[in-house]
Structure formats: structure tokens, C-alpha cells
Image (cartoon, rainbow, N blue to C red; front, side, top):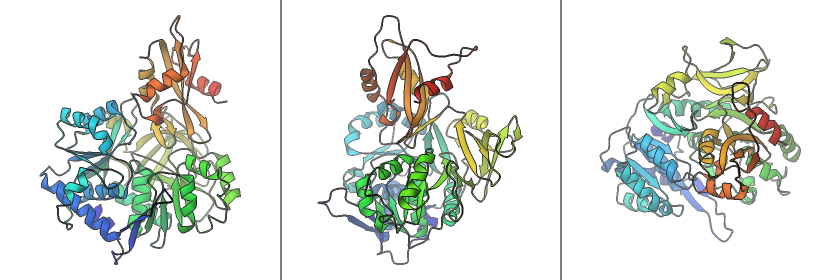
Length: 502
């Protein structure tokens, strides 16, 4: 994968590849050339080579977003290892599971977190722990500085594993989606053509890079086109507005577009140089789509993808972009909607299934789960429910797997329910997603108190924040006398959604 990306770098490696935009007006931006990316990743790759670990070993990474984190990703590919990005919000119990499942040879974390991550790496017999901070600090760069800035890329086949992305599981356990070099490169090529990427583009990158959207869609798009990036370590509407006139491409989750629209300085004038706004990772409300067009005169391009498949569908670059749809299947991908084991008719709702070069091979260390998720003729069951109109546009109407997508992050209710049920005074719980203007869906918990117990919403939320990532913590806790159930005793979450969606 790296060799294919490297082939598209500009001939003049002294050109700016990435400008790390300062979020503080008193600080100056840092500039990274294409040569910096090449040489910096070479040093880290040579460091990894010196450890004499087996090709295909996993490199688990939980660091804050930085240009050096990009070099780390590229170095992992160059060294023939497998990149395992982890959300920087994950806590100790979550990291314990990931390290036990992925069994990485190398772990890289932020310097501040090394105090509690170090014992976990020791318990799981991780060969090497390094740290990498946002300000070029940490042991990784210090150690790599002694190595050569030239490196011959380790050749891997297209079927070899390039990355493992952890996603929610039906039992609450995260599953590691195995993505090959072919998966990544084929999808990047399709998106380059479909979205008209060109060298003159400037990508305003404000997404996290532990996620498909920021890492494989946005970053690969710029690298494969030799395009400059304006790099924000985190999304800040003010900083975006200060730099958007210098950009031509922006990718975000619906939350980001809502925040931009709330700013009176976000106008058609400041967006006049933009040729492409892309939204994904969560449903884009029709209200937001229409408000954006009125405000800027431009239409957001919504697309559909997931960790297991990268991008599957897209509204057209040139053509009608329709609110509430995620467009047609991308070239080279087969998408069907099934009901009762038969393909549905136009606008008939069913289960979305897909097949194609970007579809993953299965879940890490879970052969039985992998077998369950594929049909006999090789289609992956996405777990999403949708329909296809006469023009081939796909609309997502729900998720059969009961997954919540809040602010672009996947949240599985079972995990949160199991923690809630252990809290003193809680008899049982149900976690649902309800519509939210900023987050697309807000995680919401409904709990039943034990006889004589009094439950405090703030105290429960504070307790949850100590054990799980903040994006999983419910925005609200509702206390009810009992949960609605059907005749089979199953909790009727659709009733709860209707009740608490107002």
C-alpha cells in the first residue's frame, strides 16, 4: 500500500504536503514537505525493522492526532506490519480487551497515558512500548532519530493484512475488521476518480485518524493525489473558518456541519473556493442538508461506508445529490437489498448486503462470527436496513444490529447496559439512540430502579465516565417504573425511542 501511495507523491518532494495549522493565534503553523513524510516514516520503519518482529505483527496505536501520527501509519505499512488504530478516548478496561485480542508486538500511546498503559502491555507480553505526543515528544521519535531516513519498503501482497479496525459486536464485544492492502488501495482509487481528486486540491483535514473516514478516506485521498493538507489536530469551527478559504475539499461528520452552520461567519463568501463537502459516519439530517445549501449555495455529498467495507456508496460528484440518500453503489461494488432471502423491488425495505474489492475478509480471531456475517454467495451482511429507488440511490432507514452512531462513533448498547446493570440501585436498563441535531443520534439510557432505591442521573453519568469512553456515555438517563416488553419478554426499544425522541 505504501509503495502505491508513494508513487503518487509529487516529483518535487520539497513541496509542502501538510501544514499543521496552529489553533492558537500566537503560534505559527508547522510545515511538512513530502520529503519529511518520506524520511520521517523511513526512520520509524527502520526502528521497527531493528526489533526483528515477524511480518504481519500488529502495531496498536492510541495517540492524539498529529503529523507524526501520519508518519507512524506510513511507517507501519512500509515495515510490513499491521496498523491497529484505537480511539484516544478508550479507557483501561477497553485497552485491556484490545491488547488481549490483537496481541500486538508494538504499542504506541500518548506520554500521559503510558503510566496506566505500561502495566497492560506487560500483562499482555507486548514486546515494545513507545510514546508519541502531539508536540513531537515521546520516546518513539527520540529512538527513531538514530536510524536512517532511507528505507526499502517491505513488499506485501494485495491479500496481506494492512490494518485491523475494531468495531462494535452483537454481544457488546468489539470485533477486529481485517482490511487488506487491496481493500484499502482499491477503494482509494475508486474515490479518487469518483470525487475528482486532483493535485491542485487542498484538503482541510479536521477528522480523527483512528477512524475509516479520516484515515482511509480523507488521508488516502490527499496522498494518492499528491494534494496538500491543512491539518487540524481537532475540529474547531473557528479554526476551520479561518482556513477554509484556502481549501477546496472538506470532509466531516454531521456534527461538524451543524456547528459550522451555527457560526454567522460561515457564508457563501468564505466557502466560494470549496469544490467538495463530504459527509458521513452518521446520518445527515435533511434539515441540515437544506440549511447548508441555503447558507453556502453548495450541496453536501453524503456517502455510506463502514469499518468492514470502507466506502460503499456515494452521491454523485456531477449530478443530483438528494437529501436523505447516500447515493448509488460505487464502481466495482455490488449492493443488494434482501427481504425473505429475495432481492427487493424498487423502494422496498430490506437488509443491505455488499460484495466487492473493498469488503474485508473477516473478523480477527472470530471465524465463527465471520461465517455468520457472510452469505453463501459471498455477500457481507452490513446489518443496515434500507431501500433502493428507481435511480439506484440507496436510503438507510435503520440498523438491524441495533447499533448507535453518535457523532460518527459506533456505540453498542449491550456494553453500556452491562455496566449500568452493575450500578447499585439499578434493576435493569435499556440503551437507545435518539435523534440529535449535533450528534445524529444521542446515546440515551432508560433504567428501572430496584425497590426502595433512588437513582441520581448525574451520579450515574459520572460513574460511567470513569469506565468507558465519553462518546459512549449517555447524554440522558431516564428512570422508569418498568421497561416495555412484547409477549416474548423482549424489551421494545422502538417504544422507548418513540417515547424519548421528543
